[in-house]
Length: 329
Image 1 (cartoon, rainbow, N blue to C red):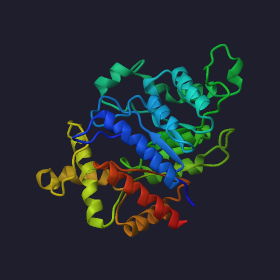
Image 2: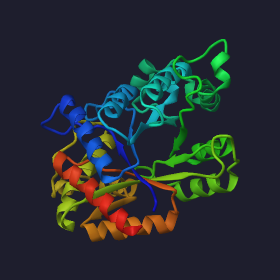
Image 3: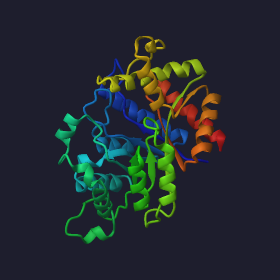
Image 4: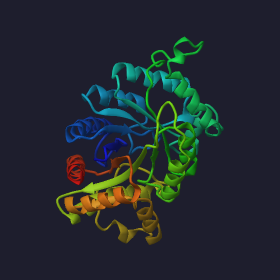
């Protein structure tokens, strides 16, 4: 069976607060654990009123402390925003508190607008040093770092698993060169998916971290009792992406079956293309679509996401997805 995991941005729905979003995140993580999901990843975004996962390592600790066995991690930390030593200390501490349960996915983008990036970054050229910073960070987790002059405490010797995240050939090439697992952001940027996957698999170099390529495919899932209900639930995420691309991000909108009537058709088409790696519908419809993605891309793991306004409907969606993936096995 292809292992499956959850990617959560801790969405703040219209009519709710960040406190509600954080409570929902822990509730969903417990539900995911009970449904057999392998990992629960949280993503770093800043200056967005509809996303409550900005302090990613803090939220990872909250989720890990409120669950028992599911792996919890970052999908991901935007490394140019941080000193590698600081991230090593944070995730070394998490790995010490929750042994063999913590993952660290690393991204190169700032995860925000440029004005906020200037407020966050140690320097505006940080992305240019991403490969060196990844290597430095991994070293802080190694046994060799225990006796180093500069070390992460806790952190040294914890061997926190590091993943490279990406939506272009850059991340695929780096993950292959360093011999690291690779997660592609196909849930919102699928354009380079096939080429990046080919590059990663064909140029992968075995390392002390990983003997063969390990590829994670990100898929949006909106599952419900019937197709119409699922498509209705999906409209919240469609509207959120339209708002983001229009320069007016906000809280996760309530679903609206008629939203496209008052929106530029070209923009709707752009967003639907960006969200094309999506399984939406009844259990049987979602099962067929997930089977199609698995057959086409042959991922070593799936990571599912889906921003749904109603929390209980979101839990049901992830529950349905887990059930049909179990049936596919």
